[in-house]
Length: 113
Image (cartoon, rainbow, N blue to C red):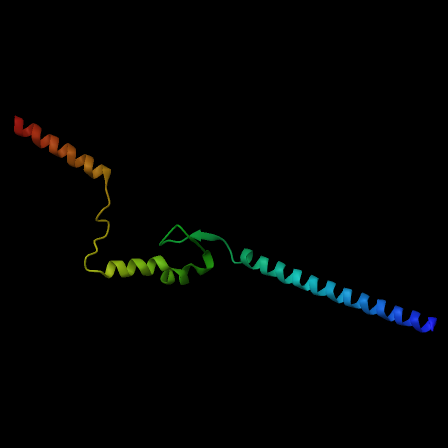
């Protein structure tokens, strides 16, 4: 009876060791998958600012595709298609404003003469 118990105990410990080894292999495989997944974004190349909206960046390799699919590009196209839209209508140019002031002063000075 003791020999049979010893054999059963040995078989149980061998099965437990095999299960632990299998679990360790699966953990290693999962770790490799995570490492491979982590390398993917590094292998995609450098990121550059989007030409349409520099608030976000894109991969250099995806630039050509992104130029027509950028959400800001599409939004700007819709806005420009509206009849009431004027590009840069509210843009303030300090240099031009200063030139206008100078021109007005020159005109007033000539009028006084």
